[in-house]
Length: 380
Image (tube, rainbow, N blue to C red; front, side, top):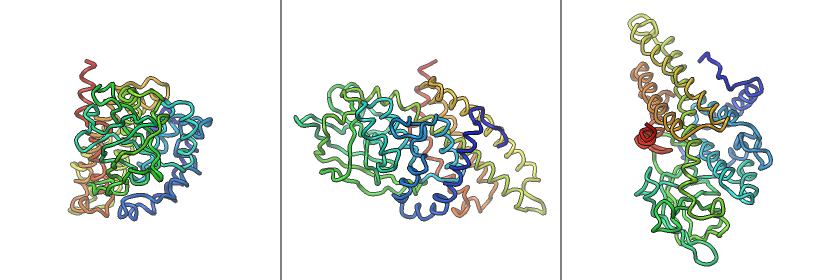
């Protein structure tokens, strides 16, 4: 892409260069090994903390880097441009924002500095075997027992779950109260009796991103570990923070679209068929012209979303539009680009094939795209 986003500036360009060097040195060489072991090395989180990229948009007062959402987006984009979907930084940053915006002052001071340094790795446990996008349908319970809560239930598809030290668990503290009975609990996993990490799940794509099942068998959670200090606020907290998550899905999607286009242009310039370069064939040029147009529209849209988020006016409807439309487009563009690679596009040694597999879940997590359309339709 030749366009420069309106939110970029010289300081952010310098930051981008530093992040790109970090990604090239510490992430790219290990991607294949991480895919095979199904998780990144713990050491990467410590290095990310030293680099200051784990909580780039969290205030320095809480151990963050003190940047804006633009700084965090630069990190997400550079991961996307390198084709990395193993480093679960996105979920980590989302949990940090739950703490920053919804946590008590004591919770912020206790956890955010450790998340910023990489001492703690964060996850959020929403989905269950019988409840995905339907958060009201969760069955995990946290019942008071005098000294705290007793957490029982299970979660699945939990990103960062294998390595996580701090998990925001969505549970029902009042099982018969519907949405008003949902609370978010801060669970520290180290030496936690009754907590069990299940198997690492074998996924279609994003194989280096650890994703697993979690089990809670009468796990004790202190009373002060309810996010925000008041139970029953969980559903409202989720609704408040999900736009941040969905905007991030859009940012990652646009970076993937731009990478797919770049890789495909490079390939079609080099690849010969019927005595000429693929890019000299009209069909190839038309497919790429369409992809470049769509990439430009997506970039313009996500830039607007990034600015709105930076200025505090991003809303649920616009975030839902960004999440569903960009993730749908990501799958479409990558599919069309893969076709131009011919048989090689089906080989996992070619990045476009890996991108095809990695993209599909973008339309599912963060709220299925069908749910996004339902949210948007309510604004009509």
